Image 1 (cartoon, rainbow, N blue to C red):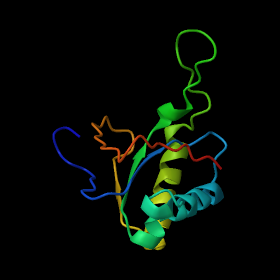
Image 2: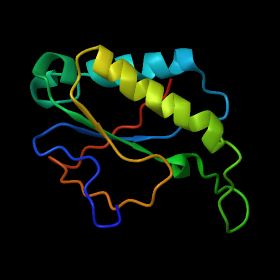
Image 3: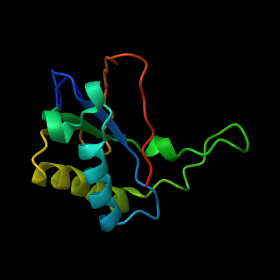
Length: 127
């Protein structure tokens, strides 16, 4: 971000692009943290909880871009920044409370995110 590294993980782990929906709550943020920490999607059906693998959490409102109508995405399902930022922070806090190693981007900033996938594996996690 502006030439400075804000958050990074150097070993195998999870890149979490975290979108917050207009209806999301603090309770849902806690459930999402638990799901991310315990999801058995690493090698040999392991999780970050069982392996200690790190997570890089990047807020991503564009995940809720609606493209069914017209030629421009609508962002009405994405939470406004004043609602979303505390929930992104809550997910990160809860992951850390669970003992996860977590790095995070900066909310609302323009970031360059690089990822090296270990195989073509991407999962959409919804609650």
